[in-house]
Structures are given as structure tokens and as C-alpha cells.
Length: 180
Image (cartoon, rainbow, N blue to C red; front, top):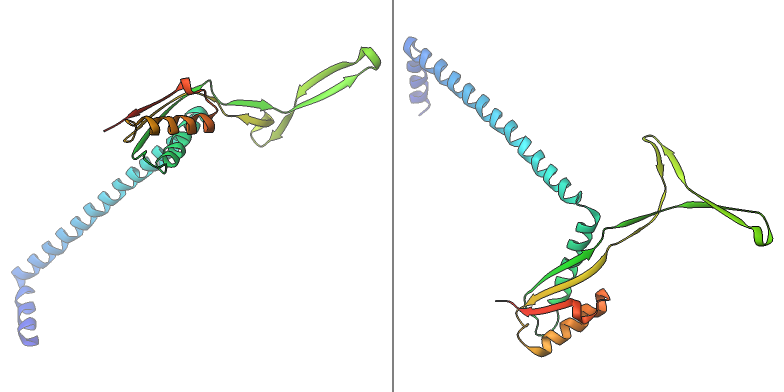
């Protein structure tokens, strides 16, 4: 077998065979270059995916809060007896509110006390910025829940009571219905 292989190589490396080998190696090199170009073109797609993920995390605070709360409520309600598959939609009132830290100064005495407050400002590498002491989540205005068990009055009542308790909503702002 080694003799056949050696003979075959001698035939290929002959004058006409050498041209074929060089042409084949050239084509192989070009194919590798094209393949490497495709690989670098797929990398921006990966960075586009990363950009999409960062855009999702850059949702406004109220929107992110609402979607996270919907997901948690969906997971929790789906564990209740008789509820089945659940879809939750919440509406929020307003947006997240940031409360800035204040420095309060009182001057005077007795009935003549005067109060002055200033927002606390911090200096960083990016310049000055107000110090946030608290961020308040937006209020929940209403809830709509669709579940496979929503056609049973007992399930609707339990879901309404649970959502009312968890979200501190009056039952009139909660809708529970059946889904298919």
C-alpha cells in the first residue's frame, strides 16, 4: 500500500500534477480565508445579541418592575389548586420615584425656628450628582388574570383574594377570567 501511495504522489508531482496540487492548495487557502471571514461576520451578531440583552435590562424602572412582578405573580398563582395555566397582566400608575437625600439645617430658637434643606451632592469621576436615598416603586393600578380554572367561581374568588392581598388592591380592580 505504501508503494501505491508513493507512486501516486510521484505521478501527481509530475509537471501537470504539480500545477494541480498548487491549484488545489490555493483553492483550499481561499476557502479558509472565506470561512474566517464568515466567522468574524458572526461575531457582530453576537454583540448585537448582547446589545439586545442590555436594552432589555435598560427598560424603564416602571416597566421592569411591572414585568418582574407579573412573572412572580404568574409563578405563584400557577401553584394554587385548580388555577392551572396562568397569564397575568398588571397596570402601573406613574413611574418609579427617586427620593434625594437632603441635609436639613435649623436656625433660630423658640417659635422662630427656621428650617432649610439642601439636596446632598456627591462628586465623582463623572462630575457632580445628587445622592439618592430611596427609590419608590410605582403603584399597581389593576390586575387581569387569565387561568384555565377561571371558569369556576371558587377559583376566581381565591385568585381575587390572593391578588388583592399580595398587591394591596381592592377586588374591583382585579379581573379573573378563563383562558383556553
